[in-house]
Amino acid sequence: MIRLLPVLALLLAGCAGAGPGRGSPDDRPTVVSLNPCTDAILAEVAEPGQLLAISHYSKDPRASSMSAEDAARVPATGGTVEEVLALDPDVVVASTFIAPATRAALEDLGLRVVTFGGTADVASSIAQIRELAALLSNPEKGEVLVKRIELALSEVADTAKPVEAALWQPGGIVPGEASLVSDILQRTGFASYSAARGMAQADYLSLEQVVADPPQVLLVAGSEAGQRHPVLDSIDGMARADFDTRLIYCGGPTIIRAARRLKTIRDTVS
Image (cartoon, rainbow, N blue to C red):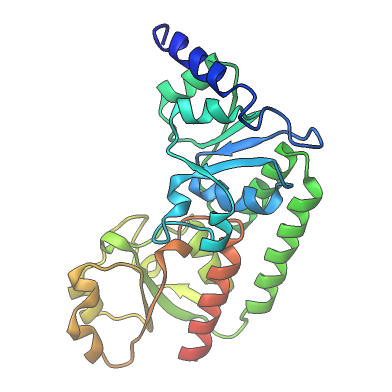
């Protein structure tokens, strides 16, 4: 770390006067996000000039929880200390999985690092939105997003008899009940196939089990050979639908898109 300091000092000196500097135009805190799930939330709750950069993951249409248009409006970083320092943010928002050495380097150089993990349900995602909005001194913008989510969920709520669904994720695994996507499934009128069979988070669902004991609806979110096997076309009484993997892992505005997609599927199979 000591050897890095002279290099980083030179980097900062070279960027002086060229970078955005600390403080947005109205002196609200500026932020760099290294977490693809917080990228999308921060883009919604930040005022112009506050969100200096998002993670490079959000620039990849296959992995981003943001629309391509929204992601294109904000620069991205690869998450290196040098890139973040060049932007000189007030706050760095990262995943709880940030490398300890990276976090230590950022903090040693005077940057505040705040970490956020995944959310287990809609309520915890809403709490995370409010925390991020408060971090940027924009609580009212957080409430706008919260109300959009609550309205979307109220519009897709289904009180009819639940339809049993299995969510077949990448790698052939199923979600646990303490997961955001499971909460959204329940809110949109689905009952968990995997929970009813005693399966837990990341348990493997084989093609053979699906054939022998099919759910009413199979939501396919993976691309393994078994998940695309022709035999799935011949299972009587089982509906099948694709479910975008980008709707599984992140909360915030992604909840709205996930709920609407599940509602469309629910209406179709009903």
